Amino acid sequence: MFEEIYSPVQKINLAPFNNLFVKRDDLIDPYISGNKWRKLKHILTKAKTENKTHLVTFGGAYSNHLVATAAAAARTGFTSTAFVRGEEVKNEMLLLCHLFGMKLIFVDRESYRDKNLLFEKHFSDDADAYFIDEGGASPEAIIGCAEIIDELTTTYDHVFCAAGTGTTAAGLLAGIQKHHLKTKLHIIPVLKGGSFIADEIANYVALSQHLQLHLDYHFGGYAKTTDKFISFIKDFIASTGLLVDPVYTAKMFFAIIDLQKQGVIKKEEKILAIHTGGLLGMFGMKDKF
Image 1: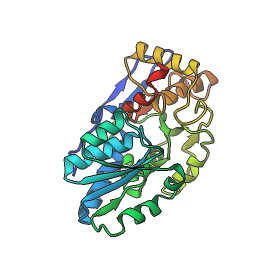
Image 2 (image 1 turned 60 degrees about the horizontal axis):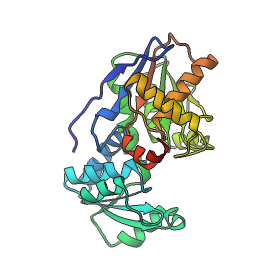
Image 3 (image 1 turned 90 degrees about the horizontal axis):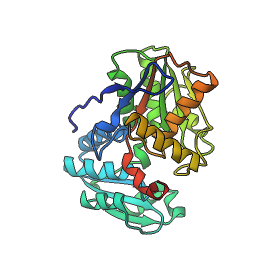
Image 4 (image 1 turned 135 degrees about the horizontal axis):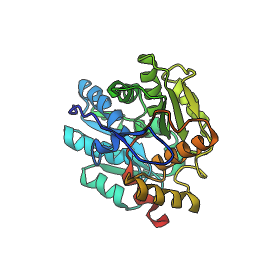
């Protein structure tokens, strides 16, 4: 379904680190970016093998997943529909979805909680429809995200990744275990009360001593921020030339720097940060900058 693409690993200069590298999954595609491409590639292959032609998924009004699904559908011959959480709005992300041919159905937040019911209500009589969970969470997505570890040509002391649902984290953990690495996997939940991420990971892969969750870098919750954090993002981008978003990747880099100050990781250790893309989501917080 998708052409195989291997994102580069680049070293970034950020004091005081000597060996800080970034897996640039954000460079995979401008619209099917980062872990979205990883998650969708095997999902769409499965949908095709089941002779489905209509992708149905879920997300918020600034969801990178919706844009990625719409773009992937358009490129691979599927039609697409998304249930969008909340009142009807227009923004840059939904414009892209519309241009890629995605039909949008806005639903109230209470109805949105039961995604299977929404799918059955609207598409039970559509034999071509294929259910894709919010964010692409699925066993197929785990396989795709595990391939990040498969692609690495060297080993690292630490791998860092921001997490919303835990799907990418589960894939990374599965890859580390598959290759019998000693690498520590540090997951930065971006939601307040992110300890549930461990349970989500455990739905797909056995937890192990490789995994460490750091729960104190959510800055108030998903899509929440502070003046201090916005200042950090501006300084980080200007000093490294690496664009990060305030919802996911910036929280990860803030955590890396803070954990080094705490002595959890050492500046000379070899560290890999997974840049999961999603930069278009910055439009949803443009007023903060």
